Length: 120
Image (tube, rainbow, N blue to C red; front, side, top):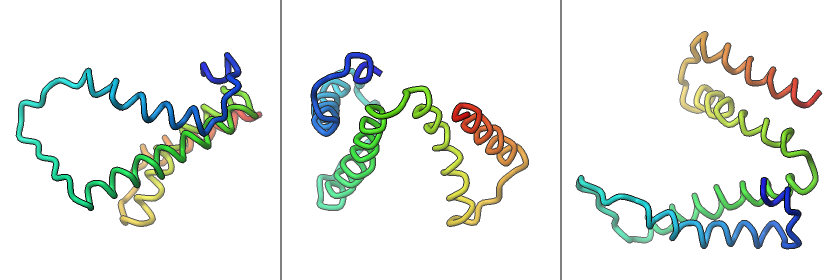
């Protein structure tokens, strides 16, 4: 929202890169010490999965978010973030053969109705 409010003269790609490169060390300062056995093995699988989830998953999503934010109203774009749980439920139904409950189907229809109402 600050990006849209102050209309920074910096590209969305640079804002996304700064957010990830500066934000991670700052957040790590506030992580309490873990009191259970948690091991991180710095092998190629771990590094590739972090790069995949960070750069392709979150990085690409934020890049798209900032580009859309520069073109459309924040209230319209933010309504689509409510579609994330809907997408997760539908994909789990399609790919994992999970059964949707009546409450989930009702919730999906309410979320989609809310998104539709914002777009009107």
